[in-house]
Amino acid sequence: MPTHDPQMLKGVLGLLLLSALSTSDHYGYGLVTLLRSSGFDELAEGTVYPGLTRLESAGFLESYLLRSDSGPARKYYRLTRSGAAELAHRRTSWSDLVQSVATATAPLHQTGESA
Image (cartoon, rainbow, N blue to C red):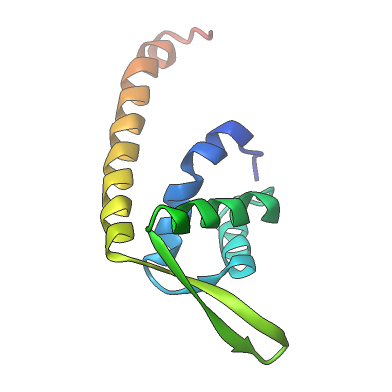
């Protein structure tokens, strides 16, 4: 898999985390594993946990502890109502950005030029 630009990844991390949590609750390392299996092989745990903290501080996530059979209790995260609204907003923003980038770069692809 290609290596993703770390700055671009940092910019979309919130969207990725909110999206992953929109279908079910997850604990931190479970999210790392899920995102790695989705093509973000180089994603570091040290990137995900601060992202979760920021989203929780903003009120987009809430957390709870759940006992684990294989060790100490795990901190699980789930989307709040405002988190679901934020996810919808970020998805729209992402779609708009992708469209704008595609439009802006289309002439480069059509003429075969490179920057």
